[in-house]
Length: 323
Ligand code: G3H
Ligand code: 13P
Ligand code: NA
Ligand code: ZN
Image (cartoon, rainbow, N blue to C red; front, side):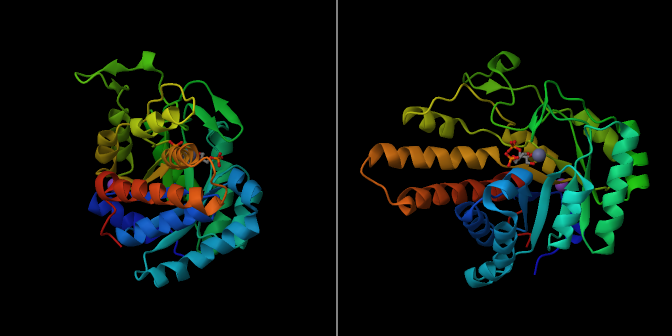
C-alpha cells in the first residue's frame, strides 16, 4: 500500500539524500515515474496538484495512484510510494485528500501572515495525524507562479521563525524558500553570469539560510520546491522542432546535489518533465507528420520522462538504491 513520508524522510536525512517528488496528471507520467523508480530502486512521492485534480479528475487520479502499488509489484520491485497533495491551499482540500486515501498533504500557508499560517497548518496537522497522514508546511515565498498566486520576488524563509513554526504546528516537514522558484523560467539571462564554456550560471541558492535553519531545527526534514534544472538539450529540441521558448535557466544539478546531502529530504520536480515530454512529442510530430495515433507520440514522451527521472534518482538526488 501507500506509505506516509515519516520513515522515508528520517532515512533520507540520515543518509544524506533526497526523495524525488514528481508531479503527475496523466497515465504516461505515472508510468514513467514508477518505471524509473522501480528500475533505480528509489522510494517516490507522487504529487497531485489542485490543477492536476481539475485536469484529470480527482477520483481517477487517486485510483491510478492506488493502482500504482500493484503496478510496481508487477514491475518486480515494491518501492515505497507516497501519494501527496501538492500545494493544498485550504483545510478543506487537505481534508478531502486525507479522507480519500492520500498518505501525505502539503498545506501551503506561506502567502498568509505568520500567525494565520500557523493556525491553518496546525488545523491540518491535527486532522491529518488522526488519520496517519503526514503534513508538509511552508515558510517563505518562492518567486514565480504557485497556482494562482504570482510572486515577483522571493521572500526567503526567516530562520528565526522555523523553530516556533515547527513546534506550534506539529508539521512533519518544512518547505523553505532559498532561491528556487516554480516553472521553467527561474532566472533571466540578465540575472546570470557566463562560465568559461558560455553556459549561463544563475545566482547560487542561499545555502547560508539553509545552514541557519538546520542549526535551529537539527535533523528536521526540509523540502525544496521549484527544483527543476531546465536542461538546455530539451529547450533546444523544442525550439528545433517548431517550439518557441525563451532562454530559460533552472537550478544547476550541482546545487541540488549539495542540497540533497543536507537535511533537504524531498525535492520537487515538475517543469523538467514537462520539457522532456514536449521535446519528445515535438520531435515525433515533426519527423512523422502523418502520425495520428496518440500512443506513437505519448509513448516516446513517456520514455523520455523515464530517462529524465532515472537520471535524477541516480545522479542528482541520490535516492537510487534506497528502496
Ligand atoms: O508547483 C507547481 C507544480 O509544478 C504543479 O503545477 O499547479 O500547474 O499542476 P500545476
Ligand atoms: P519546478 O517548476 O521547478 O519543477 O517545481 C515543481 C514544484 O515545486 C512542485 O510543487
Ligand atoms: Na538529504
Ligand atoms: Zn511547488
